[in-house]
Image 1: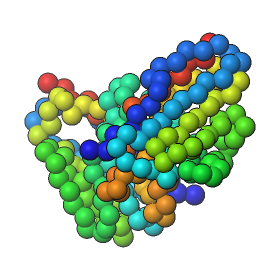
Image 2: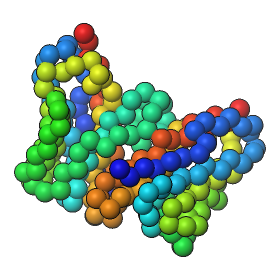
Image 3: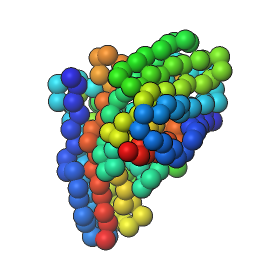
Image 4: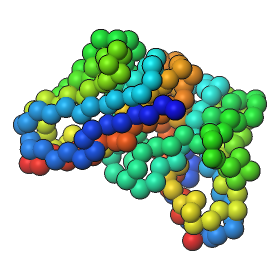
Length: 114
Length: 111
């Protein structure tokens, strides 16, 4: 079946540094991918829609200069958290829609900012 | 603004019992999804419901959709411990792939 991978699975960084998270569709092409964040014991919140070959579309309240998204190919989207602060600590999950209209989620990346 | 609410938020039930999780949404939607999430893990797709009256079943789980009532249900039959997880419904309002998630229902099955 369709698989989406994320790398890294866990990252710990110091405040002020930038962190890049990769999201790959392994066996299908995805012109659109999505980035979510999830706080502990909470639901998922859509951050942005990543579009291959064009700019990402950000949800209201999400800072585009803080969360840089690049969708360089049909199988790869990256999310860069710039100048990370402790409040950016969260579980970040990407997803892509496969050919059967199922939303396939990546395994998630747990970011901890010290 | 689309709102998706689930109830109950927490559910503790004994093995062998039946129960239903409800998902209400506030505006017309094209598609409704159910997902399972285990602690510390990502989401696993359970069901995609595409039309009014749609019913899907897999194992002890059955999902249904009533678009007129803007209601979906996830029914658990004869619960077993390994069904313990958090269950989310999600709505794709415009068929544009952007999902709005429900609040989640944390299900604990007690042996």
